[in-house]
Each structure stands twice: as C-alpha cells, then as structure tokens.
Length: 124
Image 1 (cartoon, rainbow, N blue to C red):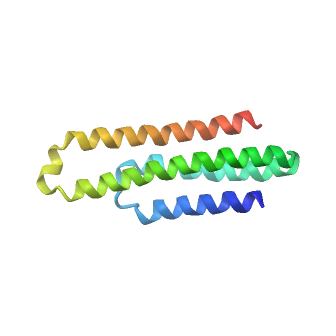
Image 2: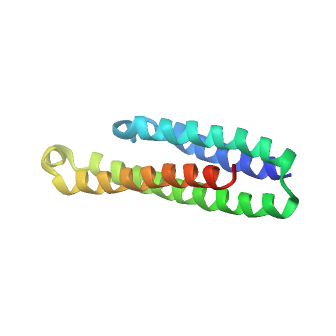
C-alpha cells in the first residue's frame, strides 16, 4: 500500500515534467535530478518496507508526500512563469525579473533535492 501511494505521487510528478518539458527546458538538469532522486527514493522506500514498522512507514510516506507536493508546486510555478514569459514577445529578452523568478524556483527545486537526501539519511 505504501509503495502504491508513493508510485502514484511520482507518476504525477513525472507526467507534469513530461507535459511541460518544452517550457522548463532551461532547468532541465534540475528537473532530471529531481526525478532521479525520487526514483532512488522509491527504491529506498521498497527496501524500508522490508525492515520498518507500519508506523514508521506511515511517517515516511507522509514526509515523501509533503516533499513531492512542494516539488509539484515549484514546477507549477516554473511552468506558469515560462508561459507568461513566452507571451511577452520581444520584451522577454530584457525581462530580468523573469530570470530572478526562475532562479528562485530553481532554488526551491534544489531545496527539495536536499530534503529528499535528508529524509533518506535520517531513515537509513
């Protein structure tokens, strides 16, 4: 049951990234790292189900769900920002505020990556 819930969250995240790949191309590396870390995290969870109590697994899934939700929100903000930026026409080439907002979202994604590593480290 635990793996089903996490797999569902990961599939939603993968679909979000696939559907918007052309819009978030500038941060493709971070998005790919995020997916890889979540895939590794899923493998870690499968191993944890063999050795952890049900209560520990529930807490772990709750943490994972929270991190995945933050990742989805960050990607959503990035997609919205990219769509708004595309609509600006020629002005988009001098829109410094756009690049600052993108940098902020990339920072959020990196924060998610760190949180994933922290959860894995704390539950190893």
